[in-house]
Length: 492
Image (cartoon, rainbow, N blue to C red):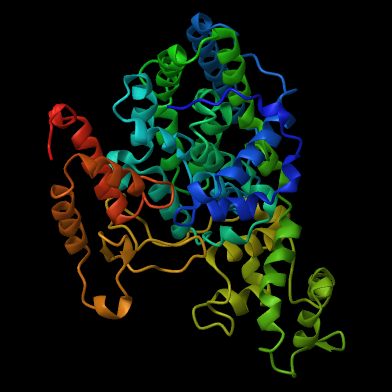
């Protein structure tokens, strides 16, 4: 592995010179990690400069990391017990004021969760190098070792789908910074190996917010499995937190100066501070602001859909919706005229009745998440005294078949590939196609590649593909070849 030892501080650009959102999606396109390497290196350099002054309690010597890890987990454990004791004594939830708040959080962190583990992808091309064994093991476990029910991105995508929060691609730029960092590290592993290892070290430490989030999601009848999974696999004794420390020691011989190496490890740890933190996102929630945003998102079409007979304070609904800046005023007028009765059961509000009943005039206009936002806002102070709404959407099983791959733009793609060309077959020729045929085609194609098969599989383990049916198959093949004497053979 070629390691460039130039100081990242020599780059003069600041992170805000780049759009994190545009970089995020460009790096997720085919060949995006290679095409976007130069720009993403500059993006990383700027963020490394910005976070360099952040405080960190990580020790400067690798021998001290284990004690640091155990001390951290013990502290988190004590803090969580204090949280539980407070809740048992009647304290309100610390994080989520309502179910809408929790669903807002799931949507807001989606740009990060949908590339979970991406920072380690660059290590897949070095699968034969024992110095990176711990890192590669972590990456494959993030990918569920090719099992969909354990693949972190597949799990989170299902969680969003069940709760109808999968419109996260419309979020503002600031929500994409952390995900863009992870993809940029994947694109620049060859020159930023210590930063990758350091980022992994910081990311895999069990945070208090993960435990509280899982607890409160369950309380609000939202499946917490994605989060509880991370509380177990990141444990200090046998999990990713322990493996992250081993990775620091394993890669150290690659570098001449342990002091300089550990300084770059520290810089990578601090990259975890880039962008909005989990607590920033939780605190960012404004229920009224989210109600206004939801209604504004409907206004572009809604301004043409209402009868002119529907008049409130001298203006038709179409006229109200034609001016996005008047949405907040419209909400006030609807309360004044009795369409909305705040701080009561929403069933007593005419507005709720026209959007929620099965045969209501506006049935289907709002997603489950949007209805929850409206419900919680209308209920207001009465919310906690009302029966909780049934879980949104139908229950989902972890063993359900995966959906077709989804592009960054959100459009379904053909699942059929010509492996020689690396391109999908036109959809018109695959009308009666069985996804199992793709997997059989992949197996046959791999048999003819010999020692080049791992290079082929690496592409399917990328952040853009690993959670798709073929990406999951490729992950299983990749792991199987690693776990067999294949690496010692001389296949042609």
